[in-house]
Image (cartoon, rainbow, N blue to C red; front, side):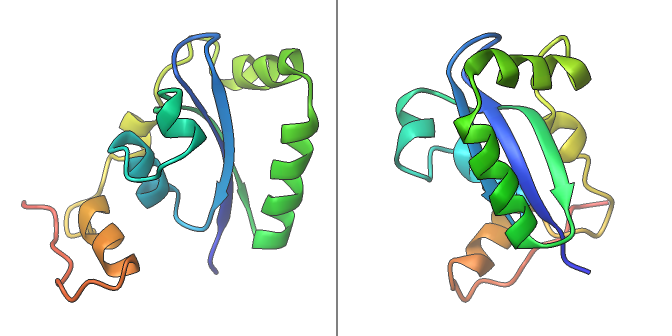
Length: 123
Protein backbone atom coordinates (compact mmCIF):
# COMPACT_ATOMS: atom_id res chain seq x y z
CA UNK A 1 0.00 0.00 0.00
CA UNK A 2 1.27 3.46 -0.89
CA UNK A 3 0.57 6.22 1.60
CA UNK A 4 0.09 9.94 1.09
CA UNK A 5 0.94 12.69 3.53
CA UNK A 6 -0.28 16.13 4.52
CA UNK A 7 2.42 18.17 6.21
CA UNK A 8 3.10 21.56 7.74
CA UNK A 9 6.48 23.28 7.56
CA UNK A 10 7.40 26.31 9.65
CA UNK A 11 10.12 28.94 9.38
CA UNK A 12 10.46 28.93 13.20
CA UNK A 13 8.24 28.53 16.25
CA UNK A 14 5.07 30.55 15.58
CA UNK A 15 6.63 31.65 12.29
CA UNK A 16 5.41 31.38 8.72
CA UNK A 17 3.55 28.14 7.96
CA UNK A 18 3.39 26.14 4.74
CA UNK A 19 0.90 23.29 4.22
CA UNK A 20 1.53 20.68 1.53
CA UNK A 21 0.67 17.20 0.32
CA UNK A 22 2.92 14.48 -1.10
CA UNK A 23 3.21 10.76 -1.75
CA UNK A 24 6.84 10.72 -0.55
CA UNK A 25 7.30 12.74 2.63
CA UNK A 26 11.03 12.10 3.02
CA UNK A 27 11.91 13.31 -0.47
CA UNK A 28 9.52 16.26 -0.37
CA UNK A 29 10.77 17.59 2.98
CA UNK A 30 14.36 17.10 1.81
CA UNK A 31 13.54 19.12 -1.32
CA UNK A 32 12.15 21.94 0.84
CA UNK A 33 15.20 21.87 3.11
CA UNK A 34 17.58 22.04 0.13
CA UNK A 35 15.59 24.89 -1.51
CA UNK A 36 14.91 22.74 -4.57
CA UNK A 37 11.26 23.81 -4.73
CA UNK A 38 10.89 27.45 -5.74
CA UNK A 39 7.87 29.22 -4.31
CA UNK A 40 6.30 30.09 -0.99
CA UNK A 41 8.21 27.71 1.28
CA UNK A 42 11.56 28.73 -0.19
CA UNK A 43 10.75 32.46 -0.16
CA UNK A 44 9.72 32.42 3.51
CA UNK A 45 12.23 29.87 4.81
CA UNK A 46 9.73 27.17 5.76
CA UNK A 47 12.08 24.24 6.32
CA UNK A 48 11.10 22.83 9.71
CA UNK A 49 8.69 19.87 9.54
CA UNK A 50 6.41 20.48 12.52
CA UNK A 51 3.37 18.30 11.72
CA UNK A 52 2.32 15.57 9.32
CA UNK A 53 -0.52 13.10 8.89
CA UNK A 54 -0.63 9.85 6.92
CA UNK A 55 -3.50 8.94 4.58
CA UNK A 56 -4.34 5.76 2.70
CA UNK A 57 -5.01 7.55 -0.57
CA UNK A 58 -3.97 10.78 -2.23
CA UNK A 59 -7.53 12.09 -2.64
CA UNK A 60 -8.07 12.02 1.14
CA UNK A 61 -4.73 13.75 1.68
CA UNK A 62 -5.58 16.47 -0.85
CA UNK A 63 -8.96 17.05 0.82
CA UNK A 64 -7.25 17.42 4.21
CA UNK A 65 -4.61 19.78 2.79
CA UNK A 66 -7.32 22.02 1.31
CA UNK A 67 -9.23 21.92 4.59
CA UNK A 68 -6.17 22.95 6.62
CA UNK A 69 -5.33 25.74 4.16
CA UNK A 70 -8.80 27.22 4.81
CA UNK A 71 -8.31 27.14 8.60
CA UNK A 72 -7.51 30.18 10.67
CA UNK A 73 -3.91 30.45 11.79
CA UNK A 74 -4.87 29.80 15.43
CA UNK A 75 -6.37 26.44 14.46
CA UNK A 76 -3.18 25.46 12.64
CA UNK A 77 -1.08 26.44 15.65
CA UNK A 78 -3.30 24.34 17.90
CA UNK A 79 -2.98 21.37 15.52
CA UNK A 80 0.82 21.59 15.67
CA UNK A 81 1.00 22.11 19.41
CA UNK A 82 -1.30 19.15 20.17
CA UNK A 83 1.34 16.72 18.89
CA UNK A 84 4.51 18.82 18.81
CA UNK A 85 4.35 21.42 21.61
CA UNK A 86 8.09 22.19 21.40
CA UNK A 87 7.90 22.69 17.62
CA UNK A 88 10.72 20.18 17.12
CA UNK A 89 11.83 19.53 13.55
CA UNK A 90 10.31 16.10 12.91
CA UNK A 91 12.74 15.62 10.02
CA UNK A 92 15.32 14.16 12.39
CA UNK A 93 12.94 11.36 13.43
CA UNK A 94 11.55 10.91 9.94
CA UNK A 95 15.02 10.69 8.42
CA UNK A 96 16.22 7.92 10.75
CA UNK A 97 16.79 5.71 7.71
CA UNK A 98 17.29 1.99 8.33
CA UNK A 99 20.45 0.42 6.96
CA UNK A 100 20.09 -0.48 3.29
CA UNK A 101 17.30 2.02 2.66
CA UNK A 102 17.47 4.44 -0.24
CA UNK A 103 18.61 7.89 0.86
CA UNK A 104 16.45 10.95 0.05
CA UNK A 105 19.02 12.34 -2.38
CA UNK A 106 18.96 9.17 -4.48
CA UNK A 107 15.18 8.87 -4.32
CA UNK A 108 14.81 12.48 -5.42
CA UNK A 109 17.13 11.90 -8.37
CA UNK A 110 15.16 8.86 -9.43
CA UNK A 111 11.88 10.77 -9.17
CA UNK A 112 13.27 13.49 -11.42
CA UNK A 113 14.11 10.96 -14.11
CA UNK A 114 17.85 10.92 -13.60
CA UNK A 115 19.73 7.82 -14.71
CA UNK A 116 21.76 7.61 -11.54
CA UNK A 117 21.16 4.51 -9.49
CA UNK A 118 19.98 4.77 -5.89
CA UNK A 119 22.59 4.48 -3.20
CA UNK A 120 22.09 2.69 0.07
CA UNK A 121 22.99 4.13 3.43
CA UNK A 122 26.48 2.93 4.37
CA UNK A 123 26.58 0.37 7.17
